[in-house]
Length: 113
Image (cartoon, rainbow, N blue to C red; front, side):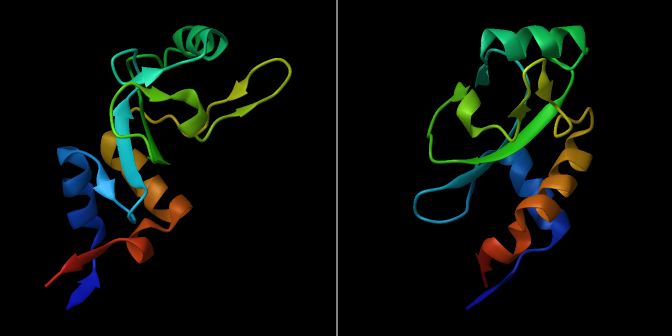
């Protein structure tokens, strides 16, 4: 039997590593740096200027199994002059909470009872 995961359970699980969404996808939240993400040079430069590099977290859904995760996975949107970086958050729990709403994660992840 499965039940819906709570926000608190999901956040705790996210601290431990990737969370399986389905047979092909995981939810991942990482600190924004070169160890965790293979950032495009223009995005990396912007994040450094905005003091978001190595100071924020970002969550996303990916099929990739290992770090560094590709920029293609990130919920960032490029404009001609810069990237929209509203999904980067200085607080881990707030980042997870925003992703729970944005990606409807609690409806997608079940736990065995």
